[in-house]
Length: 74
Image (tube, rainbow, N blue to C red; front, side, top):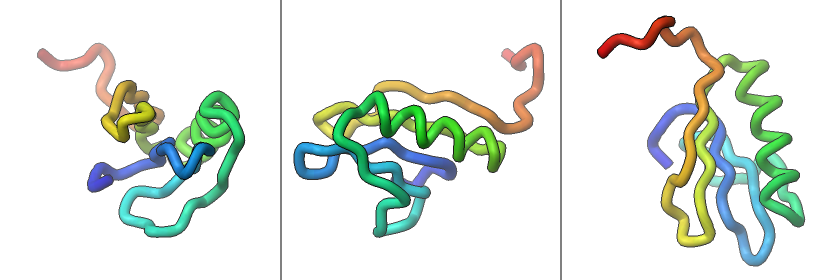
């Protein structure tokens, strides 16, 4: 989890929200959906990225709540 922002990660049958670089979970939830909702609020408040990991631990979705250029370059 080297990317800045909030990460939703699997944690022993539950789902945790973790700040990038932190070893401790900000919160733990029984469903991925609940964890995503909590992480989205944090990411919006902090204007950072939200990374949603799958059961395998790989990033499956990413949302930005920061100051991205609009329209996107490229």
